[in-house]
Structures are given as structure tokens and as C-alpha cells.
Image (cartoon, rainbow, N blue to C red; front, side, top):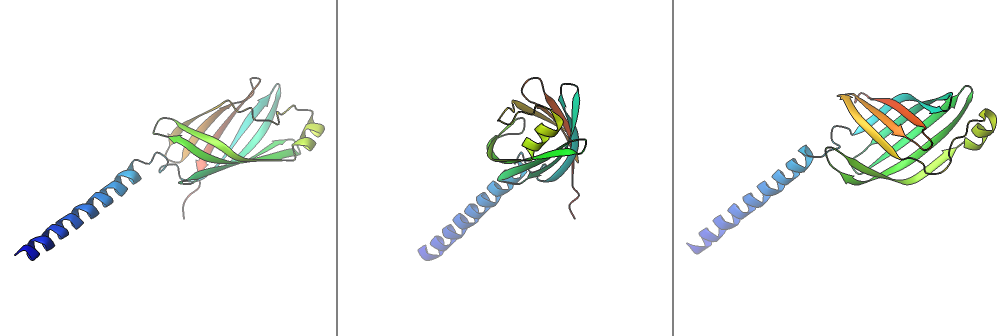
Length: 160
């Protein structure tokens, strides 16, 4: 009789443990603030440097553990690229804190020389505010130093 009771208790504990684990994973998945944003986003915007407007073309890849942002800035026939890897420091449904872990800027020296536009080459990002416009679009308002601002509307790539 005691062997039967031991087996029943073990089975009940096993069922409870598996149920708890499945429930925990489901809760984590449903409450992941990035779940709706994971994927590849593309967009176009402008950065104002005084009276000059620089066109920006952005690709934002959001994954579960990290993100990557690649921006190509163009003024006429001149361009430079800005690539960063981002690590999540604090995430919730209202605000998220991301930190730059790797940064690469290509072609900036030539861009500065050819256009005469003064683009800061050091970390001058003050703040990014983002709004979800609808299921497939995010609007980013980026505040840079010296009253330089950028606005980009990102559209999510269709998953196929």
C-alpha cells in the first residue's frame, strides 16, 4: 500500500512541476515586452543639421536577446553609415533601456569633407522616443546634441 501511495505522490508532484514550468514559460512568452517588435524593420527619415536635411535609411533588427541598428545617411551623392549593436539593460511594456555595445561609423570623414555638414562623431544620442503607430509601423523621434533631431518611420518586414 505504501509503494502505491509513493508512486501516486511522485506522479502528482511530477504533474504539478511540469504544469508550473509550462505555465511559467507561457507567462514569460505572453508578457515579453519585445515579442510584438521582434523582426526586421525598415524605414526612412530625415536628420536636420541647421538648414540642411540629411536623408536617413534605417534597418532595425530586434531579437530576443539583442538588437542591431544600421543607418545610412545621404546628402546628395554623399553618404556614410552608422551601425550599432544594442544590449537590453531594462525592459518593460512602457519604457526600455538599451545600451550601445559595439559601434561602427564608415565614410564619415569623407562625408564631412565633401558636404561641410558638421556631424558629431562621438556619442551624442540623448534620447529616443518611439511610438507604435499600428501593428506594422513604429515611429522614432531621436534627439541628438545641438538641437539636431531625426524622425524615422519604421515598417516591419513581412515574415514569410
